[in-house]
Amino acid sequence: MTQPILETTRLVLRPFALSDAPEVQRFCGDFAVADTTLNIPHPYPDGAAAEFIATHPANYEKGEGVVFALTLKNDQCLIGAMGLDINKRFRRAEIGYWIGKPFWNQGYATEAGRAVVDFAFTQLGLHKIVGTYLTRNPASGRVMQKIGLTQEGLLRDHVIKWDCLEDIVTCGIVRSPTN
Figure 1 (tube, one colour):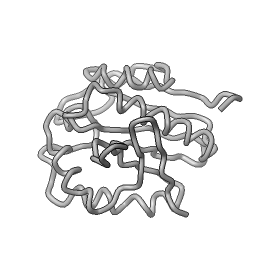
Figure 2 (cartoon, rainbow, N blue to C red):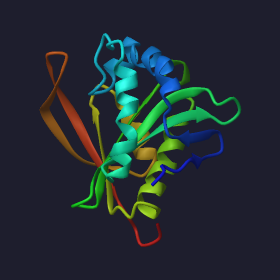
Figure 3 (cartoon, rainbow, N blue to C red):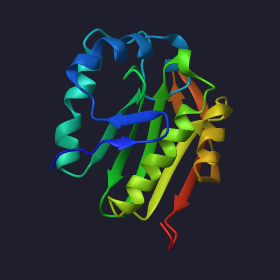
Figure 4 (cartoon, rainbow, N blue to C red):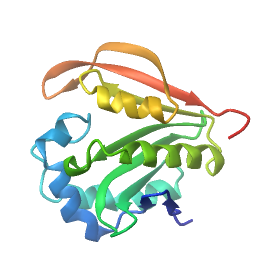
């Protein structure tokens, strides 16, 4: 089973290739990107991008996840990543994403997110998409709101990021009969 390619007005969402590793390394190595995500370490270790990419095909084959490289349609420039961590038993997935800092505040995460949520409901047959964000990253919360997720709760001191307890907001969207 091959991971599909999704297209939006400005983006192509495609499987990652090992040739993307240097750009992933560059973007994820940026403190500002790592600081706003839960799972990107800083400094970003050498070789971590290739390891990240290498896991994608097997996870997709097993139905456990899908990760898309977000690229600009006009020049195929890699700008970020968006994925779903799938829980088949409960027909839900957690959405996660990062965008390279030069591409922040241009609506790319929202555009990609709408396509990924639609894919999750119409192609994967999922019932619910959840997402979380650090309370100190309200921009991510705005993306989730724009793609249809609504706040479901605030989890105080729920995660540790760089030795500091952090609050997170949890959001979700349930598949409607029309999607």
